[in-house]
Length: 73
Image 1 (cartoon, rainbow, N blue to C red):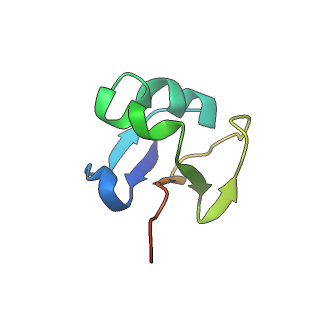
Image 2: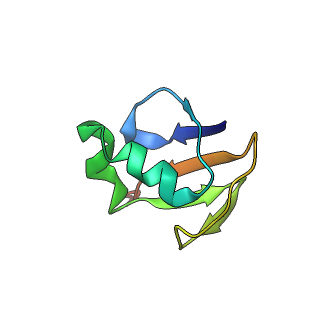
Image 3: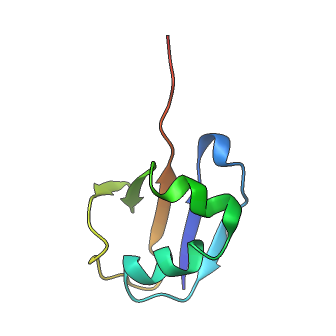
């Protein structure tokens, strides 16, 4: 199991998913319309390291963070 956390305005409680790759996590998240709309525009981190591919292999206890874009002034 891996833990997925949703930061900022996404406003969802963390969930645990049984996944072997980041692509597996993405497939599960796409099923939730509230989360799916954030997937295209959010950055992703695995264990606090930014990633830019879904080919990342995951291991038990990994933490995936969805980081939406931030507006500032």
